[in-house]
Length: 134
Image 1 (spheres, rainbow, N blue to C red):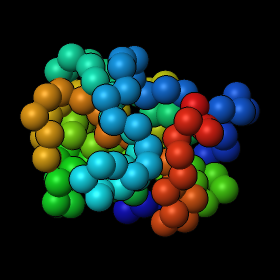
Image 2: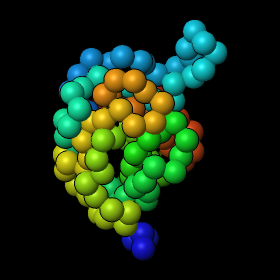
Image 3: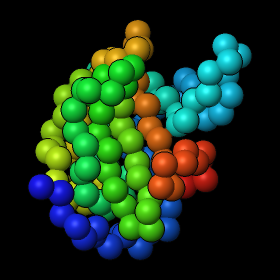
Image 4: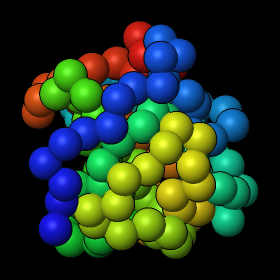
């Protein structure tokens, strides 16, 4: 069961970068006509992925096509963060998590060939450029 209350934000203003590494695909339209709703950050398989901000896990699984192992975290202010292509998921749906907590590990599940983290920031269901929040 998912808690109805969302923990208060850490008060640090910006979200924490969930993993260190080179951005291999930035937010926005791509040459192939697709649109990246987030950023893809290259990192070694098994690198810990950290929660960008305090929140509640509303999804943890692999049922959304293309994303592989995916975690969705709800934050205050109708904000949501998504973490995709994970090798391992270390938390469960309904967990309350803290900024900086390790929630999974970098992998290459879903439609990617190399280990990387796909990270999205959304307000409601609308994707926002994560650079504005990190």
